[in-house]
Image (cartoon, rainbow, N blue to C red; front, top):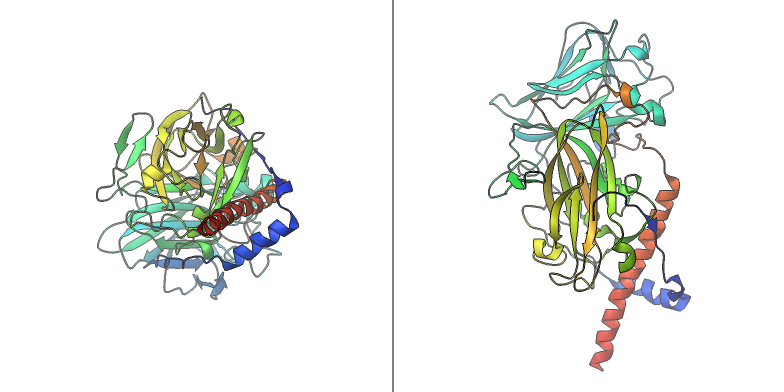
Amino acid sequence: MSSSGSSKSLSLTNLSLFTPLYLSFLFLHLTILVTGDLPPPYVPLDSIALDCGSSSQSFVYGRQWTADINSTVALLDQDGPSTNPTENGASTSSVPYYTARVSLSKFTYTFPVKTTGPKFVRLYFNPASYTGFNRSKSSFSVTTGRYTFLSNFSGFHYTDPHGERGYAREFILNVEGEQKNLSITFTPSHHVADAYAFINGIEIVSMPTNLYYTAGDDPGLYDVDKEVYLPLQNKTALEIMYRVNVGGGEITPPNDNGMFRSWFSDGDYLTDARPSVFQYNDTIQFKYNNHTRYAAPDVLYRTARTMGNDSTVNEKYNMTWEFPVHSRFTYLVRLHFCQFIPIILQKGDLVFKIYIANQTAERYADIISWADGNGVPIYRDYVVMMDARGNEEIQNLSIAMHPIQSTNAFDAMLNGAEILKLSKSDNLAGPNPDAYQDSPISDTPPSATSTKPKHSLRRTVAIIGAAVSGIVVVSVLFLLIFRRRVQKF
């Protein structure tokens, strides 16, 4: 079946089974289950958080943000004067969005980093009305070395349609050379009179060398068009477009495993109308390997979304997510899996097809076979080119799954997903957002001050679904244990 035309609605079945007495046994059983200790988080050698335009340090989520005035973590070089205005009416808790570096002239931050290698670069923007500046004149580029991150960027086109205030654009690049410096330059657009550039905050966080770039015996990314594996060289820069926790809620930076990433619920991207089931397992002890240890936080692999147990319904549709992306770019799609459903224990128990951008990425996906066991977190990397369709600057990149008849289930499963844009001729800048104000790219908000379009009904249903599915999983475990004990007697 093709990957188009799929969607969701929550299936809450057999609730009558959960009598008060039965529920009391379940929750008693919950209290005596012991979860294994979480593995230690990644410790980045470079972990810089710069509060631009500020004269004093601040703390967000217990993390220190250093003021850029007289800073020891970043050197500021500017062609002309700049101002450090505060947004009118801003909350003092909205670091790093409370202050900004704003300039009519080009300016550069240079960060002396401790190590070479790949880094997260997060740029924080609050396109507010700054004193002495015409908000409509905000237009600038952001570059680092030979890479262009943003071009003719204004910021408010992303926030105004949804009432958002602050958000981040997140990139990955490899720092090379003996100087171990990372410089980021902000240049007002020449074609706009009185154009200015601004930045509210900058983060530089190092990561494992093989987290995204191909290393060692890793085969690289599977090209779904050419059906070959291609290495991801460290000369390629990337932009994180989406990072979602499938079947679960938002994972904030303090709850990531050391790299301060944000993971959002998948509910805004899953298409509607068909049943789907939230799976949750808080008791399984994961078995990580060195290759996937830091790929995602532990909690992401404890939630998942499946199609449900109605094979007749499942056969007629694909479980599909759609993500708006820029045309004419190549994208890395990373899918996270961990099989934790108690009745799925052997190879062939649950298999399915995977489609990406309406192309077949996997004809026979078997999570247990890939991971060589139950409870082993893994991920699969794919690469797809989003060719332009007519004059469309924005189009949907779809991820879809369709079940294959297998031993124990006619279903499909996914725990998490990431979509990253790959640089083209050292460029990551998409089109001017004027063309798609009604359908902006969803940026990654970095902190509690950031917002996304609200879908309260979806989120409420998601919470209920996760709770009920968690009870279902625990009840299965309880029944299995009870049966074994009865058999002993």
